[in-house]
Length: 121
Image (spheres, rainbow, N blue to C red):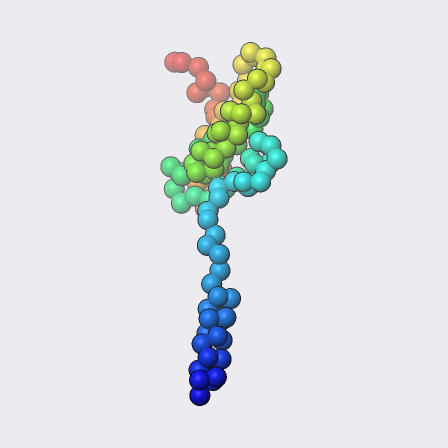
């Protein structure tokens, strides 16, 4: 009887260990991205309401444009952008590349900012 009981306990422990999966932690970007562009490409764009979305720069310079992403992804991208773009050499030209963000069908989307919004009235 003791051998059967030990066998049953071992089986329970074995199956319990196999059934338990590693906890998957939410990562709004690929933590193994080689650079900012790769991290941006992997950025989470999921949303429920417009307030879940924001825009981030596509590159180091103003004229690279903006991308709509989830606010958690934007927070994770910020230190990568700051590190990679700290010494970027960019021109000081005015580019009309800003976007307005919104949540559409569960995805953050960016639409070009209307030209009239760039100038004070």
